[in-house]
Amino acid sequence: MANVGAGMLTRTISSKKVNLKEAMLLAIKNNPSIKDRFKDANIIGNIDGWGLPLGSKKRKLSGNRIILCGDAASMIDPFSGEGISNAMYCGMRAAEVSRDAINSSNYTDDFLSGYDQFVYNRLWNELKLSHTLQKLCNYPSLFNFVVNKASKNETFRQTISCMFDDIDLREKLRKPSFYFKMLFG
Ligand SMILES: Cc1cc2nc3c(=O)[nH]c(=O)nc-3n(C[C@H](O)[C@H](O)[C@H](O)COP(=O)(O)OP(=O)(O)OC[C@H]3O[C@@H](n4cnc5c(N)ncnc54)[C@H](O)[C@@H]3O)c2cc1C
Image (cartoon, rainbow, N blue to C red; front, side, top):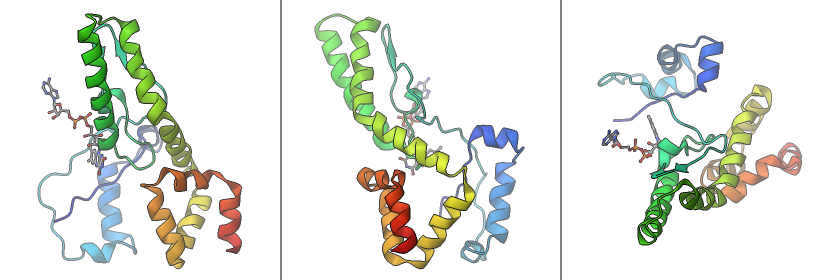
């Protein structure tokens, strides 16, 4: 069994009037690079949709007697769509700050705002970089160029694949030297 999905920015769905379920089914049926994988497949259950609260901008994460974690704090990586690890990090920090709040009987906005700093000090650079990469998808020719290169070169393919996990590797995508090496390397 496989869990199959398609994602798109909400504003693109609205502006281009996309029916995402239909688009996904069409891709499964017709897209030459994936259709063979599904030729004998049956759909089990309903196709469900859900919005992913992406961490594309800084938000206030706490207030009087409130701490937001994970999806409630919009902590999903805007490039990979992953939110579990960030939610766990938020949970860990929220527990620590809550412990300190209980010990000092202080649950004010001001006291709890230390939580925002902890979380963004650790996660903001990564979220910002992922948002930059997400915007790269607005340039299909550049994106297709990278993907086509990757499909022909095993080392490059591995590099791109590791970029989903490795923040230092992902940082390279922002550097012009990366594209220069890709062109001539
Ligand atoms: C289709 C899909 C695929 C995804 N794939 C990935 C992936 O591959 N990797 C990845 O890292 N992330 C993935 N994500 C994102 C990831 O699931 C979320 O970012 C992550 O689960 C957020 O954790 P959370 O604890 O903030 O929220 P949740 O996991 O949503 O937990 C919130 C919990 O609160 C409960 N709840 C809600 N209201 C109440 C209430 N009033 N009282 C009591 N309980 C309540 C809910 O039932 C739920 O159990 C995916 C998301 C979707 C929708």
